[in-house]
Image (tube, rainbow, N blue to C red; front, top):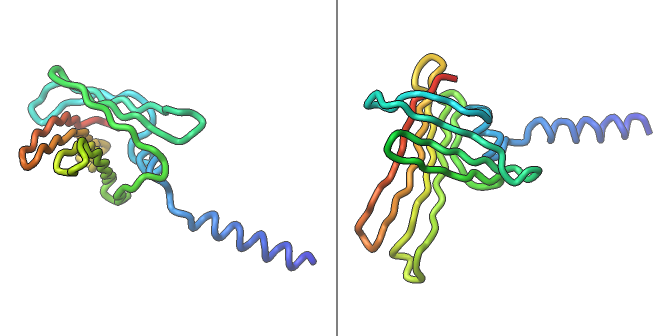
Length: 145
């Protein structure tokens, strides 16, 4: 009986440790909850704010702002994403269709990538496509971690 219990505990613990992180945990491993100040590529001041939302459900709100614009992105746990830990790269795109023809849509995008020693490049963007015309609104920020 003891051997059976030990075997069951081993199987459960192995499957627990081999489980992949979800979208929220992956982003938090790169960009923890908090407020960060930095500069964009042009040298202008910018801010990145990461907040928990919908507690206790796992979701994050990432807001990137500079002196011209503010854009936010919601990350829901269980959503699709790309994560490369060695590059601190997290990419997620969500598409919302505007009409039934599916020729007009909005892509909401977040991307992080390592920018050097203890720095992270964060971009949040909204891309609006109407037929074949595309408008992009994005805010980027390089922050110290």
